[in-house]
Image (cartoon, rainbow, N blue to C red; front, side, top):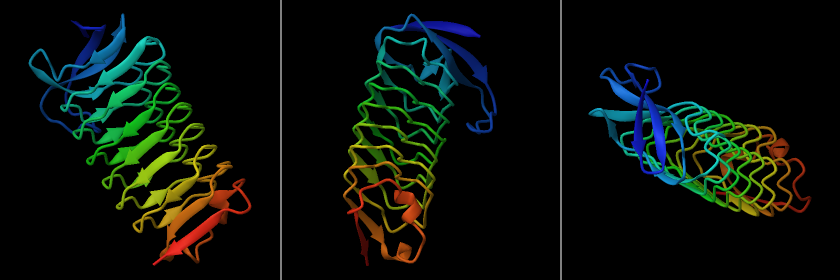
Length: 236
């Protein structure tokens, strides 16, 4: 393991080859830890002349309590499980279009995070990736993402603006449970299934727009504990 000092932090890194999620035959660098983190950090795209391809599990976790913002370089392909979990002062993060996967609980408990725009190219997101991001207001999900996983945005108490792009096929169970500020949601025509309790406890949800194909599907369980006067529109 090596170390490199950058403005705002000391990064710990390892040289890797051929991890399944990165699927890269040539050597690359994974950032696996961070110390002395202060404020905004810009992760370099290269270390020792090798591209930074992965942000490792717990690399910027709870011990990085003073991390307020981070720029992830466009060399990174994978953000691993719990990479930024419980960085409570983190308010902004830029995810580049090079990222293909975001691991389980990657940003869980980042209660200061205000917005997340996942770019086109993100293909997989792990369960509970953004759970308990209490300050999260806006999220955009790309067409390249196949499924919104279970508990992805569970207990995001401030979430009020959600864009689900055409191309997403599945919304898994409890994906948006207890998003109490969510008032309306448009489900694109590409969605073929909505899991049980996907929107459970969204007590201010007033309007849902769904593709006609779901009209005869048993989706009532997706909206448990939502308002009784919830309006569901099936569009052609």
